[in-house]
Image 1: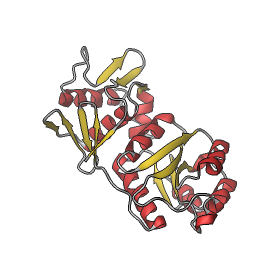
Image 2: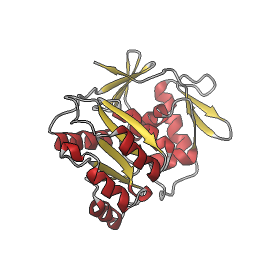
Image 3: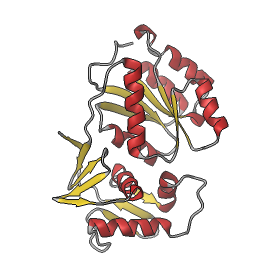
Image 4: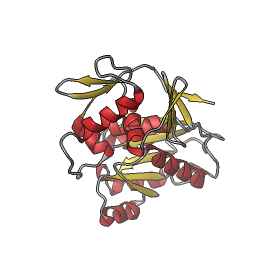
Length: 246
């Protein structure tokens, strides 16, 4: 096991969630802090990464792991005298699930869907509380022609500041996190409204349309959001890696 987290970061974060687009959202969000995130697909893979990579923090969908996993977490950083903290995620909003997560050993619990800025705030708080030091925060990420300010929920395109609603901001952030990949309407629904939300059949299309208007993004010549007929939408990949703006 390694020693405590380097001053200011980077902190290593293990990410285990059921749906890969949600994992990509979490990983992009963590770029606002000095974090290095690695995604795993199941409990056994997470257990192996605990041994091989020695993460400082885990973001775990609690339904995907068992009590043995949390017991392993308890000894993961024994050489530091620090129990590795866990931010639990769940798609169930009921109190019973949340109480069970705390009983198993989660340090905090959030319900999917979530706002990117909230999960960032929770991760920063848990890290500071556990390791008694702060992670450097970079509020603005530059994604090609977009600058996204997570503190102010503000997007700048070129020299134009876009005034987005909270939902439009999260939608754009979710699309950008999965740049180059087709997202179905169901995937977008699950990420923004939750698996139990019952909505009009065209709710995703309406919000995409509103976002495109503000981005000055015509569907025939998309600058940022492309329609994939019969499948869904794709954020046009105009960048290779998110770049923090100092």
